[in-house]
Image (cartoon, rainbow, N blue to C red):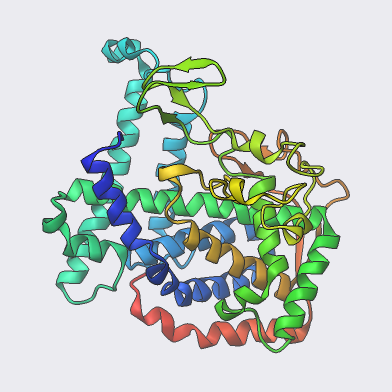
Length: 405
């Protein structure tokens, strides 16, 4: 979408929905879902991959639509992942021609352009899912059974914002898509890093033990007391950015960069992988080294001077500029809670002698990357830890009475 009135309107809506004050009110929800994930990892460690993916989708379903996603097999969780997988497949290199670069391709008849058929099918599936969730949420709200959620706010302000149901459906759907698979990929990369670099995991365990002891797991109130866990989060985002090639953008005007003329509408990419693996910026960038972020907030070889800091981001995993991800605080809260609770609750070890963490062989290739399933042993650190996990889960039971499942 080009910059303009419609873009500014939608951006304003998202910024209000994802403000610090609103997002931090979701911490009890994130804690409850994280607690359930710990129980799932305890009872079914081999299903870790789907438990992590369920968590991230469940948080988005509850915050956006006021609905639960209590299992990975929940219909809405499955529908979301299927729609997202189909959409992502369209973005893969070679899946469709460069229509933006060669607009005349849009005029090709569909029988000569099978990618058009695929795109229509994806749009139909997305639209059906997003609108269904809007109608279901509106119906619950009208019956007085709905929960406060992002969509309720959008529907309350629908007339003021001059948005029809389809616009609202896609705005909510984009929130759901952007916040589920991406966060799950980062958490899975964290697990992979922890078994590849066990010394770092021991440091994480030591930190949470010092803050929480053994009688309780980390909570939202502990986040600011866990600098090494935060460093692990940043290092995971640097080490394995979910969108390594960056998100395509189009220039709004002619520009010149290092002698190259770039006309308006040129598609440009901020190559996140190249930025995060620049040896001039990072010591041994291919290695997972959380301590780099303990040494300075940017994790770089040298301290960043004040002039550079004014326009530099800590990392570029969430993008940059006016289109930086507005939901990054929500995502970071999810990452911190899960990483801290995992370090407190479990011992992790490799399920095989050779741990493949290579970006070319251990990851699904594509516009968005995620680790392939890898062998990992997840065991409770003690019987006491096990009991605390179950006690905290039981204490959360009443929290879910507020949500439809």
